[in-house]
Image (tube, rainbow, N blue to C red; front, side, top):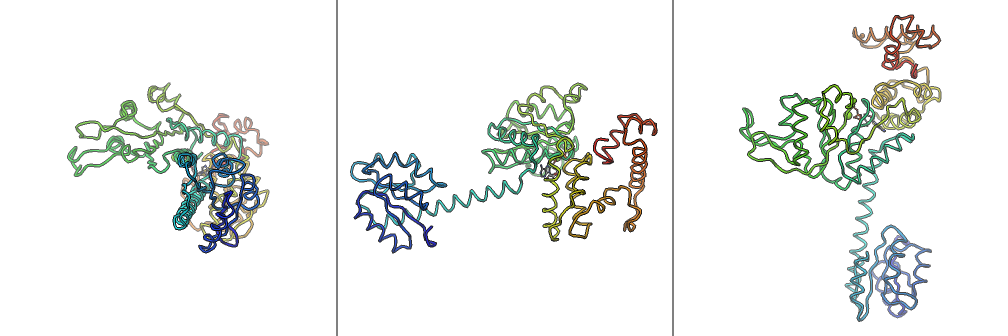
Length: 455
Ligand SMILES: Nc1ncnc2c1ncn2[C@@H]1O[C@H](COP(=O)(O)OP(=O)(O)OP(=O)(O)O)[C@@H](O)[C@H]1O
Ligand SMILES: [Mg+2]
């Protein structure tokens, strides 16, 4: 751009032609610059990046074709329109194959020149718009986390997106399994196709078959019309089978058959339907243990587990906690329409050392609670104490709602265990003895109650 006008660089050894073009372009509201050799063209582009290049195929010092990659490499997809003289049409066609936008034949027709320029700039604008949209989408759903562990997860996401093979995502509750599945889909070549998620644990055994594979009208009472299943809904795209460890043996067998045959059989359908879906499965269970117990089919496991991504628990990547907290504070302050809150370093420190058994989801929920319930601009460590159900609660005004028995028990339990741990100097073995509990059980309790680090 030059003074708000699109800048066209004209590269032709004929000064007369350059002058005429400059004149026509000026009348149409374009800025222009001229170069008479390849070297001049490259220099001109370095000085002020053009929005479009008109490039003669024959130059004194080089061929236009030779120059093309350098010109296009210069900026983000600068459109190049070739100008071809007598006997160079074939080369011009080749140039288009190499990425030139179009070619114009000499003698140039001014109307055609202007029309081609307008179209090329419009396409460039649309491409830029699309690219910026994609960047926004990616940024919005981006996974926060800069730990070594998360960087590895990012690499796996890219790898999975490129290969299109089946993926098995393993991780505890709330570690971001669905987020990873969506990221794989979005990063892959079929991002514009559907992403369909099925929670296998949430669908009753009796319904899962028709849910996954669909049914035909009249297949059973109540089937008043054809209904496509999730496999069909995901056609061409990704089917995300969540909580795969909760599938019954019967469903496992049917899913396995669908994978092997690349076809599904809607209930009551006369023949199977071919499907083309990419499967991503997720589980918070240890499937190897489930297989050992005979609860999960080995053959299905090996089918699904082509690429395995294990998302580490939050306590295994505590260095991500400050990043996540910052991200969630910004998110919830915006969502709840409150000014951006700061957080005291000691408060951040405390959040970073808690156990977070519910992983990122729990941290996210807790951050929302902080944003909503803490009125001041800065979240202080002391403000966290009552929210976490740690000592100090007694000085706080009573909660507006009476506690449920479960909450009261949990609160008592937390307090009681914390006192014993304090008394034992946070030595879990000694505290377990004092409480009359197995040490492993106490470890689990500490994590569940978010008492302090790993004890
Ligand atoms: N790295 C991350 N960056 C930002 N947000 C995250 C990240 N990981 C998880 N979250 C958020 O935490 C919540 C839980 O994530 P998600 O639903 O993907 O987890 P999950 O492993 O599928 O959990 P569950 O096992 O409970 O189904 C979501 O709100 C998600 O946006
Ligand atoms: Mg999930």
